[in-house]
Image (cartoon, rainbow, N blue to C red; front, top):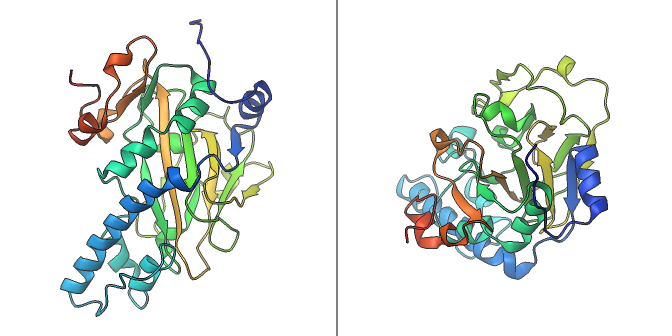
Length: 288
């Protein structure tokens, strides 16, 4: 077996907890300064959505002075699920703020503790605005691996980060601990949300406990791509903003069928690590 050189910021106890439970909560991993460029990217998208809704005559006010947490919810107040889903259930825009998030040293060093120092940022990342009363806000029980079932990519680590306080009311993450050693379960496409999320039947979940994970903004939840997890509807009056990022060792399948990921850390070839210009151009490594 190849020897992995670990560094990173996690303690031995945290690594052991992740390996046993299949997930790890890192409270307050990101501060306001870390989150600012990401929030700016999110609001760039909301600006575009507001322009589109206004041009179609669906709204009369773009609500430019509304708060980060409330604006998108207010824009879609009185509209339907279909109006929202026109813009997608998750966003992968190439705004600079997302590159800074994907390459944030705090995130990368946490991941490095688990998979070593040669890290590829997966093309499967999403910004998730969970909007109140929109069916697509509920994500059924699933394994992330179900979205790349034929890919030779293992391990893939999901890093889920909330940009507002995630609560039971607004639809925080729920996990089934110690399910990471299961094979990929036979999944189906759900029909409730209109988005075709991959989903599992209740009988497939087993008898293990469900753990709800309400967390403060800036907290990261790391989990294995076979861990069973879900989230519920947002019953608050604000948007539950979150991102789900994914990382894997560089010797695994880069999954180009899902887009262009990039080399985010390498001790062997640091000159190949992609910069912002490379990422914006969808290059997987530094052009120089």
